[in-house]
Length: 131
Ligand SMILES: Nc1ncnc2c1ncn2[C@@H]1O[C@H](COP(=O)(O)OP(=O)(O)OP(=O)(O)O)[C@@H](O)[C@H]1O
Ligand SMILES: [Mg+2]
Image (cartoon, rainbow, N blue to C red):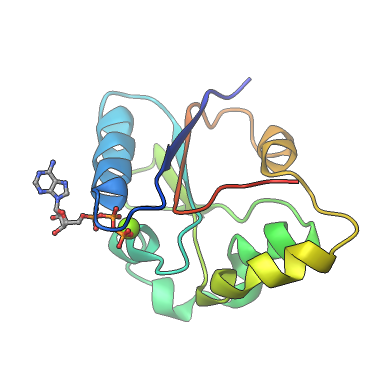
């Protein structure tokens, strides 16, 4: 079972992204296979950890999990122990879509369905509300 840690605050500029990147990188450096799920539509953590971020299609980001109820997209970073489920700018619109959605795949179900070797999991973002 993955240990899931949320790094969340609605208040801006409080160090969420910095903490998530440093913690994820530190855990990977210590030998822990780690998955960082970027839930912030600014996608700053994704851009830092995935140099090819601009080439990643919407369907290969966490958008597909939140809206289309598909599996977690997992992208390897330059550290073989650190993976990222990248964010997408359209996450900023998902609040509206989720209010009218009938079925929403809870993020923790998506995490459980992903590769179990990703332990722990860090989730970063301003709003991590689930239905
Ligand atoms: N521990 C720290 N000490 C001093 N400065 C820090 C620390 N952590 C982060 N910062 C600085 O604070 C600023 C905001 O950090 P960061 O972008 O991580 O915040 P955030 O909460 O993710 O912001 P946002 O809400 O916009 O996503 C950055 O300039 C960062 O370098
Ligand atoms: Mg941030």
